[in-house]
Structure formats: C-alpha cells, structure tokens
Amino acid sequence: MIKKGFLISAIFLCGFIAGAQRVGTSPEYIKALTSQWKGERFSDGRPKVPDSILERLKNISIEEAWGVLRNKGFHNQFEGDWTIINPEEPMTGRVVTAQYMPLRPDFEIQIKEQGIAENRAQKGGTNSWPIDILQNGDVYVADSYGKIADGTLIGDNLGNSIYAKSQRGVIFYGSVRDQEGLSEIKGFNGWIKGSDPSYIQQMMLTSINAPIRVGRATVLPGDVVLAKKYGVIFIPAYLVEDLVITSEVTALRDEFGHQRLKEKKYLAGEIDSEWSEEIKKDFLNWLNNYPGKLPMSKEELDNYMKERNY
Image (cartoon, rainbow, N blue to C red; front, side):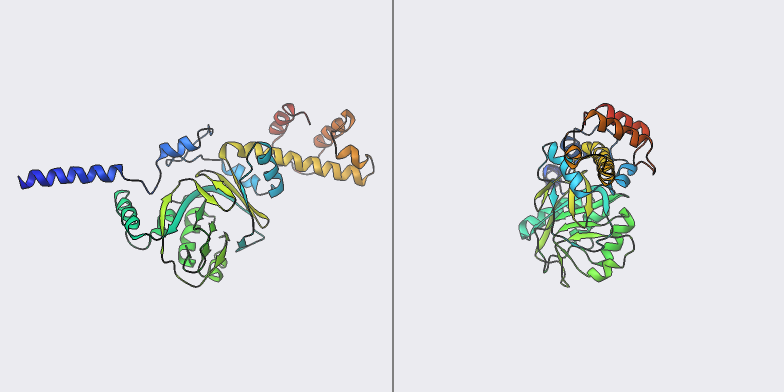
C-alpha cells in the first residue's frame, strides 16, 4: 500500500513538473514566434541568420536600419541612451533573451525546481543559465527592469564566459559589475544602463528566450541586433537580409547624390526628390563603374534593382 501511494505521488509530481511553466521556452514556441522566417534554424528553434549578413549589417547606420523597419510598420525596435563598454566597436548578432524580475521567494522556488527539470546548473546563481546556452554569434539581451545597485547581472568572470561562447557581448536594460574588468576582455562589448560594484541580489531570472521589453523596443528570441554608439535596433530575422541590401543601396544612392552635387551636375532639389529618368540612368552607369568594392554581389544588386522603382 505504501509502495502504491509512493508511486501515485511520484506520477503526480512528474505530471506537475511536466506541466509547469518552463524557464527556457520550447523550440516549437520560438518557431511560432518567428514563423515568417523560412531559412535554417538552431536546435532551440531560433532563426539561423547567415554570418555573412551579420557582418554586412555592421556597416549599416542606425538611421538607415530604423528607416527600413519604420517603412515596414515596425515602430518599436529602437532603444537609445546607453553606457557602452567599447563605443567605437559595433556589434551584431542573433538574440538570446532573458527576463528578470524583483525577487519573490515562492516564485523563485518554482523557477529553481523547473531549472532542475530542465537540467540547468545548480551551482551559482540563475543569472548564469542564459550564458550556458550561448552559441557563436549570439548576443545575450536581458531586461532587468533598469535596476543598477544590486542589479548587476555579470562581472568580468561571467563576461569572459559570455565571450568565450559567443564571441560577442551583452545588451542589458540593467547593470553590470566591474565595468573596468569587462572593458579589458578583448572583443567583448556591452550596451548597459549603468554599472555598480554591488552583487546581484533581490532579483530573479524568470524566463529565457521569451519575448521581452528593452526600453522602447519589443524583442523576440532570434531577432538580429545592430548595436552602435548611436543606439540599438532589434530586427526581425525574416527582414534582415532585405534591410541590409536596402540600406546598402540607400548608402550608394547618397554617395552618388553627394558626388553629383559637389560636381554641380544636378540641383539639390533634383537629387532630394524623385529622380528623373536621366538621373536614374546616370546612377546605374555610376554603379556599373563603381571605383571601390560594392557591399553586395552584382547578382544581388541586379535582382534588387529589378524589383525597385526608385
């Protein structure tokens, strides 16, 4: 009878854990969130945007990226006013999200029990859990509700671990500890809201790879981030390739326009409004004789120009 009662209790407990709220969201949920992405994915469900696109994105200005997203109806993807660890180094990557909240003991117990069920590390704090899953090219993005004192998500030890796994850095709507030590990690970068010598306390991790808010922006796992000293843009994965080439062509148009204005070939109003057929033809000829290396392949450029009435 005792054995039977124990068995029933065990089955009930397993059912409870299986039905409990996950800390890390399932691949199926991430695929549903990012259903418009049609390319390759990671095992966790996040879109696997090509490294070549991430590299080209570094050369896109915040204004150009913002303009493309705005034209597509995405008005809430930018956040500014950051403290930046290495301001002159831009960062791009695939987003891993984490949500933190003020500590509530009964909720924290459930989070830690669910962490056991998900085979997450039991030594150290739960703020190491998002770091454990990082892959090369990932950027750790966290909403820690702007907490500075006692809200430091990482110091230089965790910073070294983040860079070793991702070759990137962090974007925290919150703070870090030992900013000086973090600045000495070659290649690591961070966009943060502040720093403080205190240790993290009275706050808890509540989710990994769920939608989060970062200031003015709504961020999904698998977004692509463009971070520069002028601010941070979070880009839906399915839009990033089009955003890159659109921004690249816009930059080429601007370069052409500036050159022709300096040459006094056209009036400012002619360049700053819808182009005439003469200017369009001149631009295409200028592209075909571009003196430097174009940021995109000739095939990409030709395909883009066929579909655009500029």
